[in-house]
Length: 127
Image (cartoon, rainbow, N blue to C red; front, top):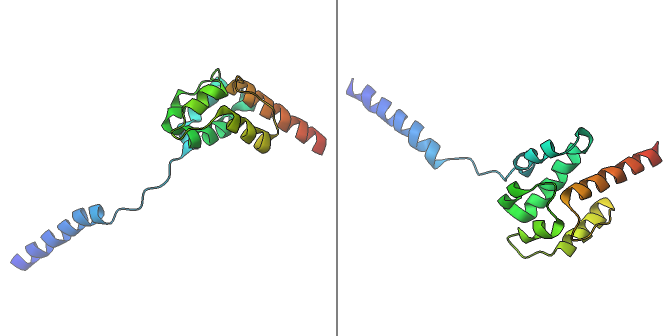
């Protein structure tokens, strides 16, 4: 009978300590989930684009992206970056990625509106 108790103690210890010792590797941050709040500030046709752009900006700004509001300018957003980044770098990125022109004083809302407008024009050309 004592062997049974010893066996149960070993099994219980392995079940508790084993979970601590062999934890799964941490996963990356789901930026799309972190910035999902921004969808509430935009009309329904702009929500997906706003969230996608905000998730991309989160890669640069980190958790400071939680401060993001539609009225923030690209200059302000660039200042949140942990590594120094200039607003002009973000502008170049948006020109290359979305084909939209903007400047340092462009707000996040203006950027989203331009991207949605550009996508609508591209879809109209295809149709």
